[in-house]
Length: 255
Figure 1 (cartoon, rainbow, N blue to C red):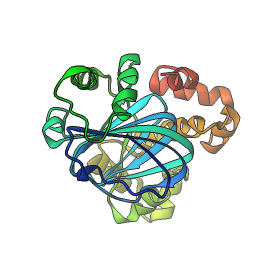
Figure 2 (cartoon, rainbow, N blue to C red):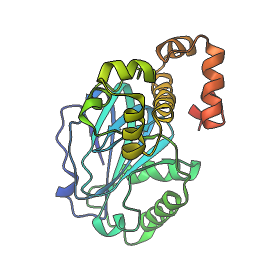
Figure 3 (tube, rainbow, N blue to C red):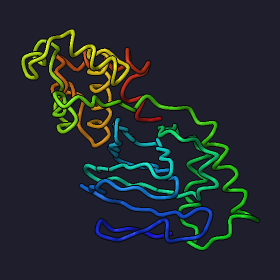
């Protein structure tokens, strides 16, 4: 296991063990676009990580973990202070965990297992004894974990590129977007339906709930979050959040 600093170099692919773990507490960190031959389980113990992929954004709030399959280009951006653990699995193990990026709820058991796995030596033998049991539990809990709705598909049309390039800007109402991109509501709706599988309004609402999670996870209060997302009141914001996810923001962040 290695405790990493912001400027430390680490190459998971340089190691031969079935699992390689790291731990870090970082603030204002941008990994840049990269990929590795191993599959990665990235767990946010505190703070929030925004993971940008080729055609979607993945949000990783506290008590959740992201599964990133091997050779998946991604960029991880951390705002404020993020305390995280990361496990890198061999190609053989990764093949049993799925080929799509997903966000998992971290159970109490999985959380307990992740810490000693992240602290294991880089050359740890995972084929017998305690570590074989830890690995088996980890793989089982990952497969059984519920998936979280914190993935947002991104439009690829060049006229909408600024929505991708400015991920913290509140997407405008459809009428305003028409004026900004010089396309009709019908054309915009057709683009979003084809490229994201959502209507623009559905996409905008999903963006708002993900941005709400991100803001609250880094310590912003309800009033600030409601204002930044265009709500008239905190109560309107909480009602929107509960309507989208079936729980209040506080309940969601508690996992």
